[in-house]
Length: 288
Image 1 (tube, helix red, strand yellow):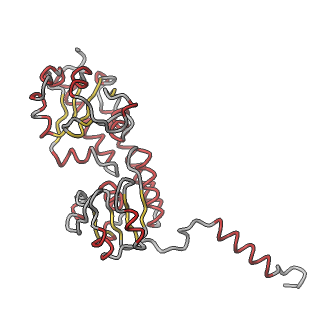
Image 2 (cartoon, rainbow, N blue to C red; image 1 turned 135 degrees about the vertical axis):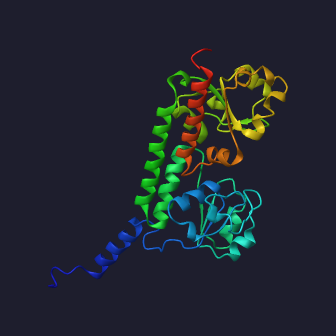
Image 3 (cartoon, rainbow, N blue to C red; image 1 turned 30 degrees about the horizontal axis):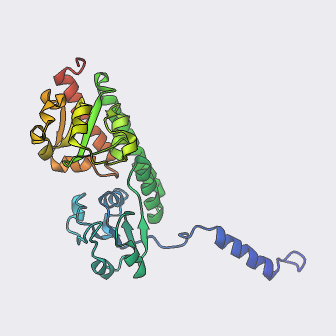
């Protein structure tokens, strides 16, 4: 190269500086090999992406797939066991925004990624983010496409007679409900149902028992152990959905699938669709 065409040292330095500024921070970093997940849905997402073996600990509620059950259980949102987490020497910790331990973990020099799990879009974003961290974005895209395909299949299974029917999805017996802006509520919308909860109340509002009675949902969805005693709540025997057995009742193991924002979200939609199809067949939902 002649002196006339050779770039100056200063020019080369500028090019290198610009390249460093424009490059993503994770470029060149090795994918994490020791991961702690403090969110069940993120635990499931990692495993769906083929990274179960990289988990060295989880929150107490992470129980699927079966291989995570033997991992150290490190507390939950309010009581994560910071010292035990640090002792596991993770190179990545996954946490929810409401986790109290985030700042303490970061103060110990641990890398923490905080991810929302409120909506379908959050689940998609989390899968793609984790795929990028693991160096397998193609697999993350594949997992999301499978969820979308299962959602579409579930919607096709719902009888036309049930579309537009009102629904109460109970999250907890206080009662807390899944509102239309939650990931559960978004699934119900895709299945063609109308939520009795106004969007303004938020994703998982606590309702007054009288509100549910006044709303008279045409369908009720709940965990089996809560549903079996629902008619004994003051005034709830008047719910026509209970009287007519227009109910989707799920044992705990299957109910957990419904309330986990993660890679089994499509399976959750299929479970709901199967129940709705059975109601449509057995209960004559064309008649009000």
